[in-house]
Length: 165
Length: 165
DNA sequence: TCTTGATATGTTATACTATGACATGTATGA
DNA sequence: TCATACATGTCATAGTATAACATATCAAGA
Ligand SMILES: [Zn+2]
Ligand SMILES: [Zn+2]
Ligand SMILES: [Zn+2]
Ligand SMILES: [Zn+2]
Image 1 (tube, rainbow over the protein chains, first blue to last red):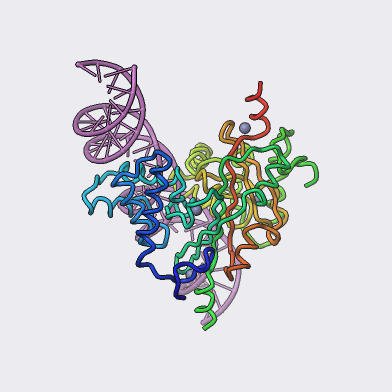
Image 2 (cartoon, rainbow over the protein chains, first blue to last red):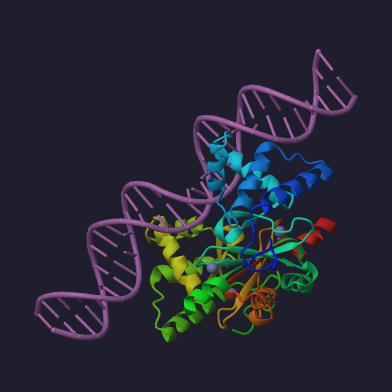
């Protein structure tokens, strides 16, 4: 699987070399435009999430931040992660109590995640909020949604292959 | 269970007097049929969840179990809740780290929850797993789902009304 | 009968996740 | 200059969850 991310909702491998700096550059641009401060801690936290292509616990992020000379106490990580999630640069996976960089922060979306319980990979699928199941239910009941959590656990294509072998 | 919950996906009030014992009786029957042991702790835990019509933290359940003479340590609650969730008698709301009795344990379903951030009510909607958003995504990527988490936060109809007033 | 294995309940201790409260520094604008 | 907002750091604490071990029960098998 060569290119960067030919299948945005899949588990394909990709060339990782440039994708971190590209994403950071995009985040930087976005923050500048929106009048937000992508400070050193926040940027480093984003890089950490991007470097791994999986969900990291707040304390994992904290440990790396601390290694890099930032504060070593939980609020340091939680505040950086709050910033990133609040502004769509990262998401929290509720099922895992963990965080992951957003796969396509360009446009507003309701993220849906596929979590492989075998290899712990996490894929983010972009969904059209208006067509989603939750929206239909909400409409039927008069409920006004502010945030939706869509997460599926199971086995990814790669691990399914290995199982067969 | 016919009129136990006239509006299974809504936030309507209902007569609570008999719904607990009805649900417990049904659970008892189900367990008997399936060769499962609905032991005193487990049954009491289910009753506790049914009595409140909202999501309870494990430690809330534990406190009540302890009052009733059961063990007072976390595993007591977690094990009872594990049993109930494993067998479809209760669900965990990941967003809240809390548990709620299943609104319709009769049939297999993928539960979806509507969580009111104002009054903290939680409604469970029954969804057809095969038609769901997640299933479509999974099918497109070759991912095999074992469990789906569908949770929406927002404002319930009752609270929306109050806001207007 | 005795034994073994599976299941269930209880305990202690510990690990993991998250937030409150306060001090300091820096930039902006009245 | 001063007030305000915001960002970072600290210490302390709250909230959620599991590991590991002891004991009890019951059913199946030697
Ligand atoms: Zn995203
Ligand atoms: Zn996998
Ligand atoms: Zn249910
Ligand atoms: Zn409400």
